[in-house]
Amino acid sequence: MSFARISLNFSAGLLALMLSACGKDAPQGGGPGGGMPPPEVSVVAVQPGQLELTSELPGRIEALRTAEVRARVAGIVQKRLFREGSEVGENDVLFQIDPRPFQASHDNAAAALARAEATRDQMRAQAARAEALMKKSLISQQDFDEARANARQAEADVAAARATLDLHKLNLALATVRAPISGRIGRALVTEGALVGQGETTPLALIQQLDTVYANFSQSSVELLKLRQALESGKLKRAGDKAEVTLLMEDGSEYPQKGRLLFSDLAVDPSTGSISLRAEFPNPKRLLLPGMYVRVRMAQAVASNAITVPQRALQRGPQGAFVMLVKDGKVAVQPVETGAAQGDRWVVQSGLAGGEQVIVEGLQKVQPGMPVTAVPFGAAPQAPAGAPGAGK
Image 1 (cartoon, rainbow, N blue to C red):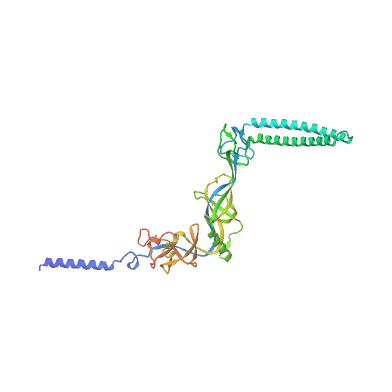
Image 2 (cartoon, helix red, strand yellow):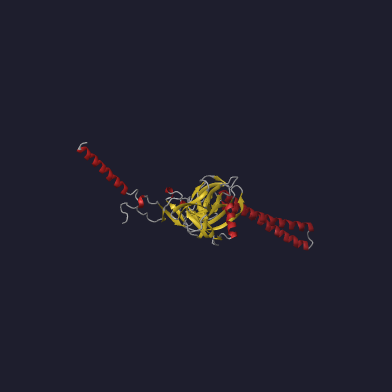
């Protein structure tokens, strides 16, 4: 064997020995002892406390008062005297129906009354003369009775004529159509020249009073029964005597004015199984319009030792709802029983006693039994060891 070949084999063996030594000294992974560090999860420590239980129920806005303006006499509309969509006051003139036929009937009735009054005066005078002659036995009893009857009939004719005049006076007044209530008036349902009130009371416009409005909503009778049972058993307390309610608009924003609960229906709707409720809200800026869809938030009870968890922490599986906990540095599964949602949190009725560390973020990267590092929810994440900027 040549000296060059022996030298080449010696160099190759020395290189392999050096590489082997370097492999034994190099750490496996980036963590202490050569392993990956446990993943971080964000946790919240649940604690029992007092919680106001509220219900969010769908509803519709209804005007405080609604009046249909109708033609109560037959005639031709001469004028429309309001601006559509404007505010009108009670007794404001809205339409003018041609008054001439009613004026003529009124004048005719007034003349008939005057004629009846003249006849009455004449019959009174004849009855008085007949009474004087009867005392002197100058006329028969029959003539006297007839004179008195004619006088009474003349009185009745005057009363009938006066009633007829009052009727025509009313018809003349109804030719001027006035607003029955104050409020916002909609579009006109007839135009000038239209024949209205012929055989029916023609609708002319609609007025809605909107300075205060109703919110009509409903709640399941089953939920109300559970709430009543919890109140009677002492598990919950009443929210208070102020039946204030909050309104959520269609876009999710909160209406600035608080309302008050007026009543709840005494019967259950058989078609929906719900009970109707009504709340009243001030509406000075006319933001709430009839027919608008809203949600009504109402405080119904107070739980003294309620435990809640964020909605993102709750998970559901084939066996029911559960949360992930951090116990002794490892992930554990805890089944729970939940009640109604309150805002962005779930009320936990059983399964948690308080003090547990519930995982809120990082659920997608952990498994039961896996070691983890728990950090408070909302805290800034720590930089991993060896990363640029770590330890600064």
